[in-house]
Each structure stands twice: as C-alpha cells, then as structure tokens.
Image (cartoon, rainbow, N blue to C red; front, side, top):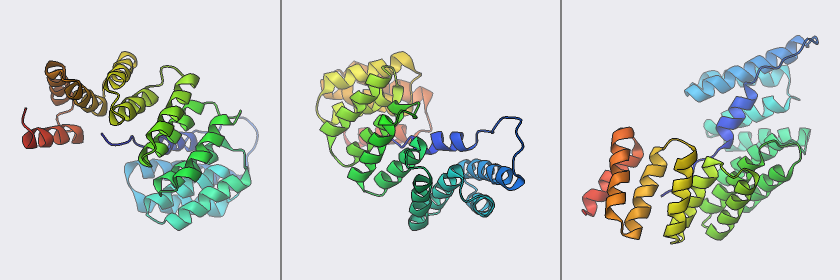
Length: 253
C-alpha cells in the first residue's frame, strides 16, 4: 500500500477558482488577473498545460502581488516540471503574507513532493496551527503523508491522530491511519480504521485494496475475498485492481 496522494492540489485549485463577490469596483487588471488564474487552474485540472501556462503568465503580468496568482503559478510550473520556478512562486506567495495558511500548506506540499520532508512537515504544522486556517485537519493529514513517504511511520501516525482530533470523521486521515497501521504491522488497528472510513464515506479503490491486504494479513481469507470482489465490481478499470490481480497471479491463494 503506497502512501496517500497529496490533498493541497485539488483544494488549492478550488480555492483559486472561487469567484470573488462584492459590489466594490475592482481595478480591471486585478480582475483580469483573477480570471486568468481561475482559467489556468481549470486548464491545469484538464491537463492542458500549455494553455494553463499562458493564462498564469498573463495573470503574473497583470497582478504579481496577488497571492492566489503566485500560488497558481507555483502549481502550473510544478506540473511543467520546472521545480525551480515553481518554488520561487510558492515562496513569493509566502513572502507576500507569511501567515497565509494556504501558502504555507502549498509550500509544504511542494517541499515534501521534492523530498524535503522535515521542512515540508514544519510548513504543514505551521498551517495547521494558524488560527486563520479553517481546515487544520487537511494540513495535519498532509504532514502525516509527508512523514509516511519519508518512512517515519510513528511520526506519521501522530500527525494523523492530530488530524482526527480536529475532525473525528475526516475520511482521508482515517485512510492514511489504516495504511500506516498496516505498514507497522498493527493489523487489527488497520482493520478498525478501514471500517471507520467505510462507515462515513463510500468505498474507494484504494481502501478496498487495503482492506483486502489487511484481512489477508489477519488470516481472514473470506473477508479478504469479499474486499477483492467489491474492488472488481466497483472499480474494474482501477490501478488497484490491476495491482491485486498481478499480486494474486504471483502468489495464488
């Protein structure tokens, strides 16, 4: 079971694509920068990277002081594999406002994706403790993912439990705790977190594969087979099912 995927990209894209409301007049260049940033994020999600780059570069010319523009530029250039330029824009966003929680979270994700685990975790913790941040469970979960990827499972579990202390039924933290518990050999605990996840949200391919692995580790072949059947029925084209079938072929039950 691989460590989980990063949360900030989708969340940040949603944040940057939010339409500003209000009746106050807005400088045309500022409004144009907002529109181009929103468009860049939409094209980024669709995988149209050249168009996304064109839109965000226009936004940077129109209003480089806007934190959302700088964060959007960081996301676009990272997807273009220009990590040096991406980091410059993430850091510029934070220089504009050192207490901006989305900027802290975004830079933390960038650092962890590029192997700077300790610095990335620190940025996530700063974001989680920021009183302006409305979803600290996201930052704590990201810190847990970062520690997980670094192989620091005990620290990962601590961060993830802090996420659940903020929001007891946060599905992503439950899934990550199930994965960490499985890797630590705490299979009964992993089973409990898988069940808690399934109690609060529809099953995903990732949790069904993990449930299969956990039940196999516990020696419950029937429950393992049930998870495998659910995975085949609900996610017939998933990478998780391909991984399951490939493993079963190598190690037939």
